[in-house]
Length: 135
Image (tube, rainbow, N blue to C red):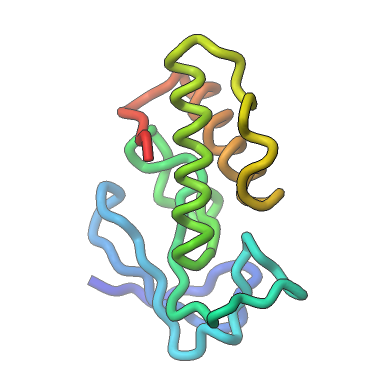
């Protein structure tokens, strides 16, 4: 099922796929070059040019996050993957009882680290609901 909607900061209508909050939400556009990746904003140049954008849930759905625009981050596949990998590092450190943030500062971009940490922090503040995703 596809729903056309407007997302703040995006000047084109987009189509979001998914019938429930439990499903991955994908973003497709006719002109992806006209929509900025929020993890790698200009002047960053994607090389090669990304083929699609996805809606990343800052606090993952499986960890109690909601499928609402306030919990969405528009990014391309590499940024989406990197953010989940970085969040996985935080989750493994937390599960081992280690202070979070170790062996973390040198990985990913500053914005990838920021949003991975934000999702982790929201999950902790919500009481650690759901099942963590150790990517």
